Image (cartoon, rainbow, N blue to C red; front, side):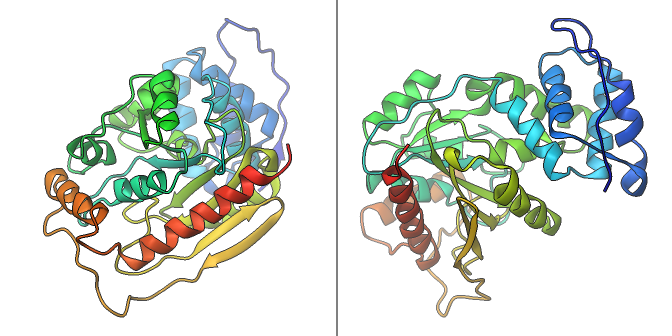
Length: 330
């Protein structure tokens, strides 16, 4: 897809002239041209700052939904997204922080993202879960954590304090990055997701290097995000694990291991091969509601129920990469 750089007069605090961008990205999946990283960053920053009119904003979001993001565009959007909120500081130690985005929840299976987070924290790694607190028709990680007695942090300071205590911290996207939360909320207006739903899954909210657990739901994002982490992501920001989501969540499927690709430096390593089905199905929660899921997770943490092998393997891989990131010279 052709990339075009469009000269524009962007004056801080004034309305952003977005029509010239819409003209290029709004020509449909086959006729549209992609923006450069710099232009994409400038456009998304203006969108976050409220300097793009509602009419133009809707046109941009729908155009990108139809066209699909290029690597340069997602990189530019992410540059602006991460600059829109204050970064967190993780405690120093053996492990680099592990970031678990949670924006999908569960519709059919029990949501075991909380189990992954609590196992990692119990092993000594700083863990930040960020995401939505509720989603109609789905069971969110925030709801499962609350049922386990793990409250959401109200702000960055509370999340940092929880990690200092060795606890998994949950921070809602509204508390972590309010401007991104607003962009996510536009789904209720437009009826479809927008680029922000991808950005929140790949952003790195820490000041120092960290391990990002990233999931995708559509095959084309495996290719695009793989190229992003290889060519456009700053290695100094840490590493990333990329896997097909379990109903969109970044926790391994308890019934079959997904392929996990590890992006470190300029390398891509397959850590876990795709598994069609485990030899023996694990004992899982009887229902998917938050209370039942939380009770089952508590039983696992007490050692009364075994950790599903695919999740146990994911924990070990996360701890391995986290240790390596922490040990690298800065």
